[in-house]
Image 1 (cartoon, helix red, strand yellow):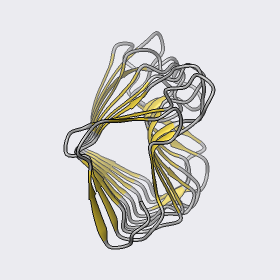
Image 2: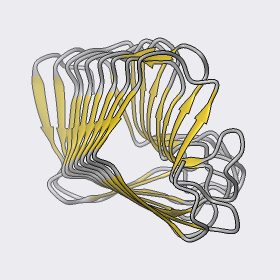
Image 3: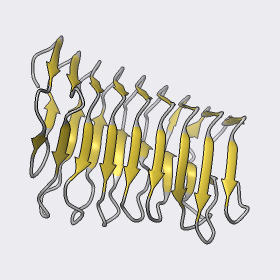
Image 4: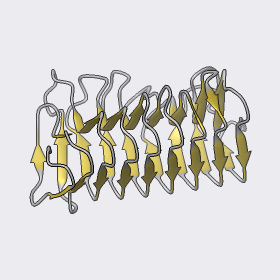
Amino acid sequence: LNEANTTYLLNQSVNNTGTCFTILANNVTLDCQGYDVNYSSSATINGYGVNVSGYNWSTIKNCNITEGSSSTSSRYGIYLYASNNGTITNNNITTRSTNGGGVTIGLITRANYNNISGNRLTTFSGDVRGMILIGTNSNLNIIINNNISSAINARSGITIGGGTSNTILNNTISLAVASCMGNYGGILLSVLSTNNTIVTNNTVIVTGATGCGIGFNSAGLNNTFVGNQVNSSQGQSY
């Protein structure tokens, strides 16, 4: 998708052994209009549903994105790398990698001012490290009104792995969490560079032998938690 200032309307479902869509210009909108995007259907090829690397003002909406094969790893439903001011809204995303992948939406390294809202995110992946993953030097992103669930043990629903002034607001997270140690938690703040995060009015329901609702692993400074409702089957909220 390489025309700047353009809206692309999907008019049929698509399937690819690797990546389905790559955005290659600024201010591009992909509106799937409810059609299916089936990516990485090959057992040997890593890919993304939508890949945005180095372009800004992207909008991805109304897509049903599904990872086709469970046999490889490091695949994302939607992947943003060094991309700013994006909007990801009203998508259904399902991942199923069995090798530690399973990320539905990744904001990876220098992805700033993005809005992730109103998405329904489901994984059948074991040991997923964050269904929404915010990586190093990714700042001022808003994660709001998303519904996140896992069918089997996951590391976390939302992981903030670095960055400043990210907001996690009004999300519903329901998943099995395998541990309350290290990189685990319904919402996880990880690494010392995670600062000034606001976590407000989220509902977190976790099951599992030792699962906890909100986890910390070397989190940084001035992180704020207000009005979150946490229900853990093992009684470990934090």
